[in-house]
Length: 63
Image (cartoon, rainbow, N blue to C red):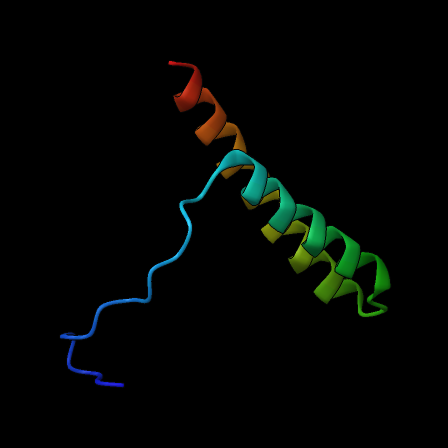
């Protein structure tokens, strides 16, 4: 893989509100299994970001 900026990222499925919520759910499930409190908080924070992304996508789809 070239690191000079000429490579393009692999194609992925478009991000939807449902897929963003699925990412959040996966992170929250993992957070429940973690015993490290600081890691748990970081996972919850990232999940909150995915929920905000899902909300933004849903709002744009309504408009």
